[in-house]
Amino acid sequence: MASADFTSGSNMENELLREEKIKRAATILNTTPRMPQFFHQLAQCRDDFCVVVGAGCSMALGVPDFDTMRRWASLIMTRGMQSWTDDDLAAAPLHEFDRLWESSSREMKYQILSQWMSRNTSFLEAYDWLAQLVQAGYFSRFVTYNFDTYLEQALHSVGIEDVIVLVNGKDPVDHITRMTAARGERWILKTHGDHPHRIYALSQREIIEFGEQCRELLTRLTAGPIVVIGYSARDADFIRSLSFAETGGEIWFVNPSPPSAAMQAAMDRRQSGENWLQLGFSTFLMTVFYQLQPVAEKQLQRSRFRVPNHVAEQTVVAAIPGGLHGAPAGRFVALLRRFDSEIRISAKGMTVDGKSVMGVMMLGIEHGSEVTVHVDGSDAQEALAAAVAFFEGDAE
Image (cartoon, rainbow, N blue to C red; front, side, top):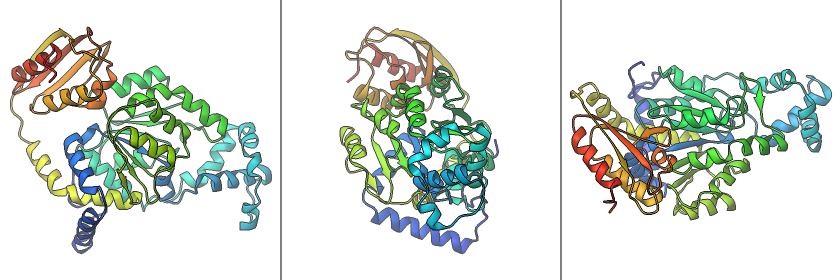
């Protein structure tokens, strides 16, 4: 993997422009309600966040909104690839879209959507900021409702080649479950399909079917802290996945418009009712990127110096009333984060990062479950003893 050039950005912006953006980011941080609280949680959770990427992120790059895309596609399917006026677009048979779309071939669908997916990507600065944040260790898990590959391109452009791209409708759900539970992996789950593979959920029936295929998985993946960007609640399967989790990590909703009633209800259930960051996709990522530069530089410097590691492992039977869910999972992860060592927790055939709230909750550890703790690091013995004591009942 290439080393991170976090301070300059891939666009090699001049120093004056960079300073202007740093000042603007500082202003946004200080004037946007709840933004300081978000940074505080990001510092605590780092890559624990699951980032949910909605259609608004693609729209910021020139992809039309959902209804416009459907109208445009309806005209192409009824008239062919000829030109038309704005009046034609407004009068397009939107009510006929589902029937026309589902009766079209995969190649026809690919040709229709290629008009937007192959656009000039020279203005992907926001995705470039996001990719560099991933490289600096802040995010590693993404659930996207977009067909495009802008996120993948941005990650590859900064030297991140190990990201696992999982496509609902192509990859079996059990395979997706294993990959998203694997320790330390970076992954992108494309819930509604993927343009290069010519897999799309665009009609109402397709959207419902694709959502049902991974409903339980989405509920688990969004059980930890999540940040939702570019999402307007048009994807009902995401809202349903949140509704099945009565408790979980905080939800941060990033959008110029307020959350829908359903999204607000989900946020309220998870004590996140005030976590609306009234910012657009690009503005939010610019602010996060430029505010975290000094922190990332220090982390990258420290990563060059490694202490020889020691390994320790022990299997224990969990004696936690109610299991390792919700608040107990949060306390367990907070305990393990006091140690420098890498800590892996294995149960029920899965292994996850012990410092990830979402990963730990995905194991579904109950009272009486057999759990293996594997520690690798300079303070391995101390970390192992603390984890074992927690599982043996010292959960307070």
